[in-house]
Image (spheres, one colour):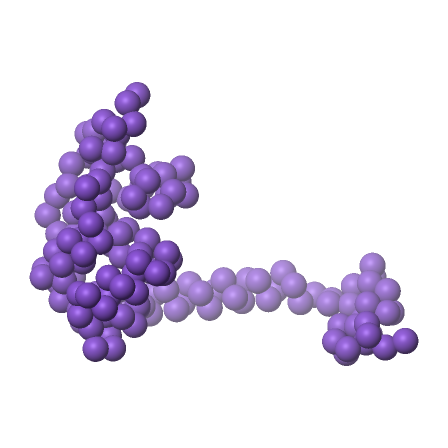
Length: 158
């Protein structure tokens, strides 16, 4: 399979970050972008130029915006698990999937999504706490390890 041919089927191929951001800001506006992505460059004195400057320096934020562009603005189906591991610019879109219309987004939907994420994070934290909390001092910990856990400076004491 030809790599050049694969990249031609990715809507991000040949699109600069400024171009991409201009398209989604013109369609949704900074308020919707902040509500959905929770990136402060869209909330505190937003502009295309300052947002591009921030996104070029911050990989996680740029990938979040690029994924938003692909799956909300371009309306592509979600990536497979294998493709999801790659950054959005490196993902290969199957030839039968063509970009569609931008999703209709609202601030109310963004709030519901934020609440859902908060519930999911709280559940994840609760599950992690149950796995780690049965007995932190467990039978395979020595007394010295327990003392070190209680006093972080214990390992420096003689």
